[in-house]
Length: 327
Image 1 (cartoon, helix red, strand yellow):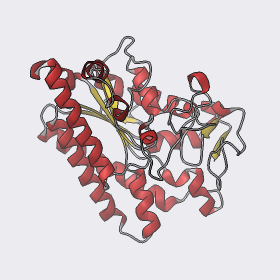
Image 2 (image 1 turned 120 degrees about the horizontal axis):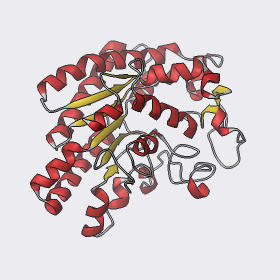
Image 3 (image 1 turned 90 degrees about the vertical axis):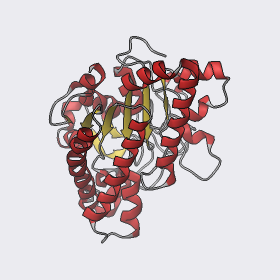
Image 4 (image 1 turned 45 degrees about the horizontal axis):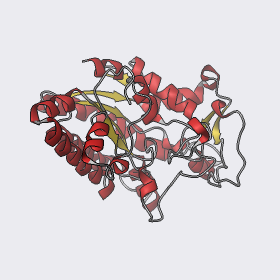
């Protein structure tokens, strides 16, 4: 798994932006991407369950950390023998699931699953070695958009500040629980301008829905205030906060700088129709910001990961993801 890794392991928590196959395990009517044309640009053109034409943000960040791709879904590992499980889990696991929310059981379930991983590592390596591995590993989190989508649909007049405060509280509790289970280095990816995804533009004459974007902006400001406070309380905590709102806005306002020719419509499907086998598919996928009506292309994910890794203060603070891994 590791090529020349900067950290011993990568653990990933989040929603469909980081899911690498978790939802393949569910039989319920739930979002899935394990069918063509998803994965058309993944090695072997395999539809793995990633909501992308190829790699997603979990893969791209893992690659920058020195791994070949994201670690496998936690649920993929459960059926393996104890020895095999330990050999795999020692390099990390991906707990992200399409549709996951901070305020629903899905967010908490991933944290519980990580506690299981800690127990396995402790039993296999011993307490001291397990603690060392977990403390030197990096933890990427990309979640919160689905909470906003759900509550915005239910009540567009809901007090934005009050609602986002509940997300902040849930996020803080997740970080505390991860910390209590040995996590120390957190790479946090904030919420993008979700009012600009193709599925929302249809409600505003193809323009961004600014009410939705406001939630994303408030969320980022809450995180900026909460994380220093939390890290002063949790003395060994280190973090890097990625401003995905600014990164995505840069893509949309200066597309040609990034070789994008289309930043409003999806490559696969349309604003109205999902990405399925029967729909139209663009040929120049690296020139599109959006793969389907909600998710970025592999090209956009790679650019995003590089921005988080490099450390332009406009896009990531107080340190880059690279520095976070090295510390």
